[in-house]
Amino acid sequence: MKKLLLNSVVVMLAAATALSGCSTGNDSNKKENYAANAKTEESAAPSEGPFVLGSKPVEFSFYGNYDWYTMPPWGNDLATGWIKDHLKVNVTPVQSGGDAATKYNMMIASNELPDVMWMERGPDVEKLREADMLVPLDGYLEKYPNLKKWLGEAGINMLRSEDGKLYQFPNWYTSQPNGNAGYVINKKIYTELGSPALETTYDLYSYLKQVKEKYENVVPIEVGLGAQGDGLDVLYSAFGEDYQVKYLGIRGVPKDNVLTSIFTDPVFRESMQYSNKLFREKLMTQDVMSQTADQVKEKVLNGRVAVFAAASPTKYGDPGNAVLKKEDPEAGYFMIWPIHKAGLDKNKIWPGTFNQLGWNVSVITKAAKDPEAIFAFLDWFTGPEGQSVGMWGPPGLYWDGFDADGAPKFTEKYTSDSEGRDKLMATITDFQWAGNTVFVDKSKAKFEMSLPEDKRSWATEQQTKITWKTQSDATAFINLDPQPDSEEGIVWKQLDDLFKEVRAKALMAKSEADVLSILDKAEADAQAMGYSKLQAFMTEKWQENVKKMKGN
Image (cartoon, rainbow, N blue to C red; front, side, top):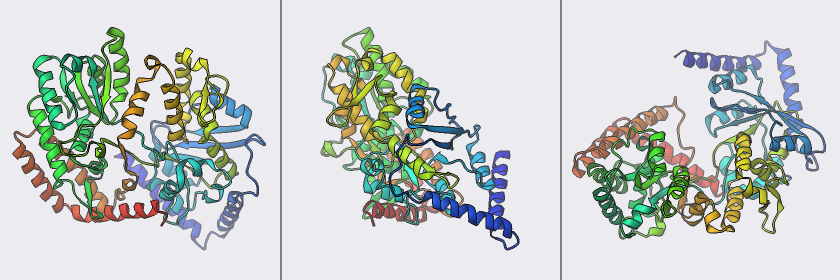
């Protein structure tokens, strides 16, 4: 409560500061602000030729707007040390101190911003833009080509603000599918049961019954953290062609360019009946709504699951495969093509999604003395050399140069010194602010698939063969959430709580008929709280995204 009150006071102070700057009774401050803004606008204007990194020192401050994020010292590791020495780029951290919201508001109120802010897309970025605190990046796109080349026009358009300008530099964006959602199978159990077909929902149900009959201490199907969706979302995908698990996240299903109720959706209703059947017959984890990530991990690593369905089952499937194979070369895990309801096209089933914009963004504030030099660095950082340095360290150590396809040529040390390589990668992961998913994924996959089968990364092989081919593009459905304090935002919070409660009740219902009754009541409750108005708002946002992606 104290924290909320403090944040409210800070916001009011910020508003008061902004208003006082516009009053006629503060002419000296007003003149100083005009002069400062004019100087910033002048420095933000692109120069005639591109800035060359290393031609002169580049210094900027960097703030990560997260409670959990503490930027390590720049230059103390091999990767950023190389950047500092060879490109003359030095970055000074500004820490959140474990309370990012308060730090963010205080910086706005005092108008003392860092040069670069690393944060979530959405309301916080727009607050800065509306206060005229951000540098537009459009003028740099042609001079520094990496972002435009790797993200593409559609992705760039999706990042534009309401004024049509680009202020955000994305992190871990992509122009091709990525993700790990799907089904991991215990190889030894599968072989011992005769390697039956595992394609349809009926196949899966029959297989799980066999597991339960023969393996007393094995969970037939582990679905991870059910309270967060996880494997339940994956099972949902089996019942509809070209359905996205993202529909569960936005609590709505698109039909004829309008979002409709998730509670009346036939695919959701059938998937909940199926999940309920697995739960009632004890074929599914019985503590699905309360178990922890550590409990899931322990079961997978010890081979006590026959099927593991999750949003990212490779997270535990990869180390689990290594542990089991070490004990028995014939054991381990493998992934299968996504399960589908009989009669549906298996190539139109999508257990996971990706979005082109990736994770978060960096914005350059008007506090920066040389915003173009900062953009030039970010654009280099997101290109092939920057990504290679940022992922695997300086050239000549674990990689050295590029092949004809533009992929890094990994050295012998990359495989022979995996411990040193992984240790280095762990130390530089907190500097990955401009991740280029396509470049990194393609580089790793190309190298791994060139190795003998027994030397390949298990996770990369599963991604290459299955998961990257079975994730759908949900870019059009991002950034639909209303402002928390708006009328629609209040409804969204109530709906979110209702959905989570209802899914838990439906999963544990006494019968399939009870599942439908629970969902019918949920529909009535949702409409009473303003569900239709919320969906109209989110439909408008979705259609705006569609237009942006088309360049309109």
